[in-house]
Length: 571
Image (tube, helix red, strand yellow):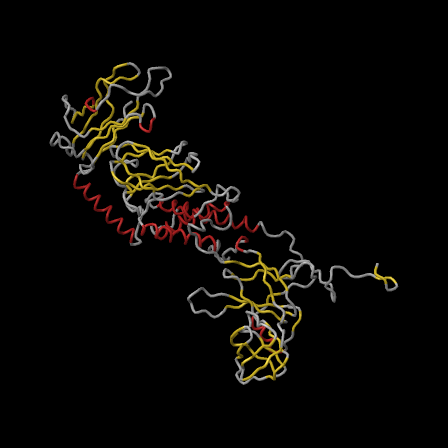
């Protein structure tokens, strides 16, 4: 029944909480409630004195959370009804007199505590100063692992018992929800929590009357945060705003996302798993983003190797290449091209313009029927035939590099297009320009104003004689995690690798240590790289070629099958 010695408090602490339980006399015993117990039945004996003191500020909470047999005594250490009763260097024993449990009357000791035995007032004040200083250091990017926890119970120490029920719109209870309470709508001042909801969706807090803000979080659910909670007395609040992720979304329940990674880093740094001040959360997010980047582009495992390139950062996609455009006729005067009976394609700027008077480069597309060449002396008579040939194609924004070759549709039976250098393409174009089936391609970076990241484009030789849709594989860049895009690439089997990478970054940058989390990240990285390499092909064909493929080119024919005739008739 007794809680034993519950701890040593500083005189600056406001409350002491004593937990005790009551049981039946059966064998085996069971939890039962207590009766005939009021605050007047609580006696405090100071330093072993026979006579009890008479302090006020005693609060009873029986059957906490509606659970029989679990009780709390909350003592207000600032109460002055008995002046000087609570003092540094003193020990206090708590006794209950004349209570009724399972039909029997009991007089029992339920616990004890001390004030200033190991923590003096001066020490307590210094601790508060140090805590504030460390919080300031954290907001400026300093060490977080030294932040001190505030005194008091995580459930709060107010007079009213407040139940928070988290449910769906159809009133289905949601267990496992992280719940915390703040006194401001921004969530900067957390006064209770984080607690986790039980099977009935309930979390229980102890709050004084006032206006509070309730925050909730659970992977796979969204909630309306914050909910305004006005406390006047003991009461329950039910919030039916929990929305589960769409059924069939396919996301594994073992996956970790942005919220879980932030929570792991926050807990590791001693800041708790939620309810951070804005500056603190910004710093945590920066550490998480660095940890994710470290997995996407990992360091070399050994001194004589390069960093691994993941197979799951190589998506397949397609690119549509265009036939030359030659609809209508043109007139060219002082480098200005006027088109009749046609519409210049959207890609005309930067393209190659061919007419009977020469080959030019288009500077700008001025409209559907007008374009300006870079050579302002160019001229061609009205009614001249022409062609506009596209010289380069934009690649995806997340494109890093081409992997292997570009492939024609399967029914084309054509050789795949090989990747060569930009200088090789330019040399071929300078030697002879013609339209045919492309055989080579090269990628290059486009000019950038630095207002956006630098993008890439691809060139072909010979220029395509018709439109094709080509398939290719490329190594992709990935964007940062966010609340809208919370999941990392690579799948749930890499969840622990991402967690350890984020903790390793925090360990190194915040604690200035290269310790257990960096070592664990390295072990998990070695394993993940080995497994990823195992996804590669087992039969590599002729080892002299840069990509494994089966050559199916039927020289001189691109149909589905060869026609067979007998005496001039198809068979």
